[in-house]
Length: 263
Image 1: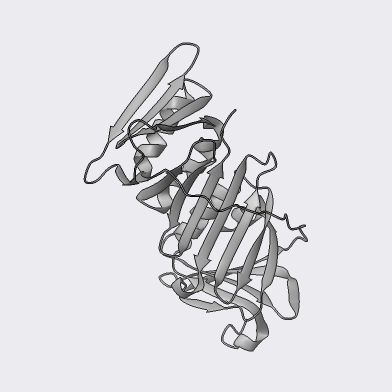
Image 2: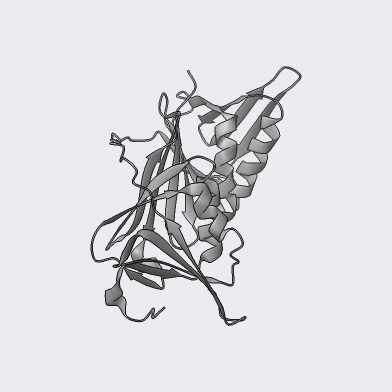
């Protein structure tokens, strides 16, 4: 394959953040069976809901953050997430990932995994799908509470609580984050305050106005599959509104996972 003649490609992008891309697809396959990736000059976007319409995913990877990014016209690339992951699951951090679509073969996504140390290249061709686009409109919202905390700490709390109950109450009072879970045999309450390397509030609500919501732990445990993408996550909380958790996708961009509250 002559990878240097760019005129042969509708799409060709290259990143050395192969490990992060693998983690991203591994997490997405737990939530979405199939989805459309939208490529254009600015980067890669994905906006989709899970089959229960409980989770909304909004991802944007910036073209400028790739080693190479060529997509002169908007392209809708529909893939089966599990099949995509099967092809890249052994991809390591030291490898380079190139995604491409030939002008002559626009129904297949080319996946080139190269390893300079081993002087090796592996090329896959993934059959693309024709997936109907959902019309998703997100009304703008001002969040009462915005905070950041270590992704590993959040993962540990969710893992602990899913052994106790089915839902978590997330409550923000002043500069404290209170996480509650009740089950048949036990309950758990974790209270987090601000520290230099831990929880940090970017926006707080007055203490007399607690911000709280009940959310399903079985969905939040899926979100925590993104943990290894970044050290810090951002939480956006508003009464009677979905919880939004934002993960950075290494240095490529970000993914926002939105979870509807339990009523």
